[in-house]
Length: 119
Image (cartoon, rainbow, N blue to C red):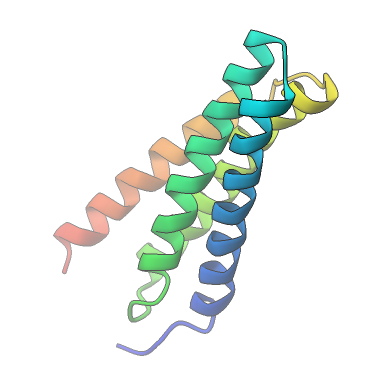
């Protein structure tokens, strides 16, 4: 097995997600008065941080096609899910992309499970 050429940018994207999640969580706690918006931004922060940390940890492992596909799905799913919730809370945009992101996150986790069993 060789190191993934995509692992570096996936790990970097995960680290950026985690950093943004911390900033968004702090802003939600101190800068948003509306309870629903605050809750949505906190949820977005939780998902972005958790999936960012997973990307940092798993993207460094030797490359396997199924894992790479799953990690790409985690990144895209997080951007769609957490991004949609954050845009809704901060900009008043509709959150219609959140269900697609959530579904992609679940599918990506299942791909990681299959990858783990196939080792």
